[in-house]
Length: 96
Image 1: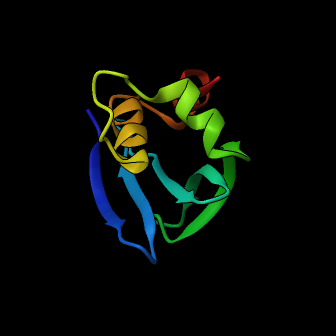
Image 2: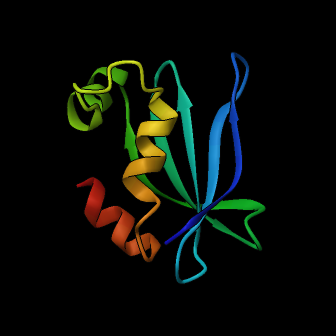
């Protein structure tokens, strides 16, 4: 199981960086315009490649939100979806 390295969910910043089981690090960035998931490089300092992107929050809500938990924050939804992935490659498969 992965772990959360950094999580910020404030009006000015909304992102989380996760370390996956195989050591890969990803960053989930949430904005009004959508969500992006990046693979990180150099010990998680720099984004390397975009693994997945949504250009609207509507698509994210339709695809990932659980109707039984209507008050869940978008960042938490994405963390819960991806924290169990073993690698960045598995993240891509899970988000397709």
